[in-house]
Length: 171
Image (cartoon, rainbow, N blue to C red):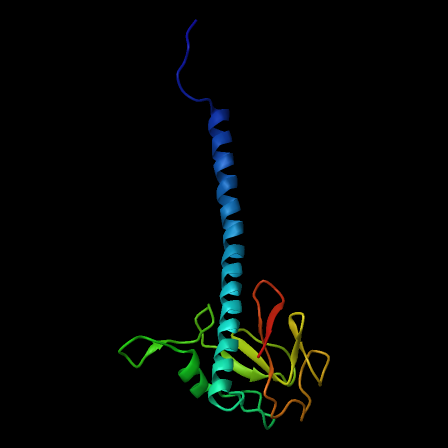
């Protein structure tokens, strides 16, 4: 009886099918893993922001860094970001910016109407976190009415997460 060395077609097809399934699982799982890592970075950025707000309030007699008067949605926190959130390289005037994991710099906006967009941090002066959503006066979305929370020394910040939901923290 003659014995042949080698693989049959069925064995080769089976190995290729298993390899294809493994590659498919990697391509399905990889984007979800990357999304999760970006959301973790956003949560860490919010923690860093709350710490910076606390430092700012300590240095400025308890005042919060964001303008809390008027109806402007954009809070214009440029100097606060430069002084408290930008990581400066030793010996140089420039450093890493406070930016979303996708690369754009964060925008600080007051919750008047609507929710957070990509790369936006919603600031609710006088608000509190209710789970992962800030609560306060105004609409049911945790927004501010025209005069609620103005001049407040505490509040809540939140950011929209890619994986769904949002992350909220109080300062």
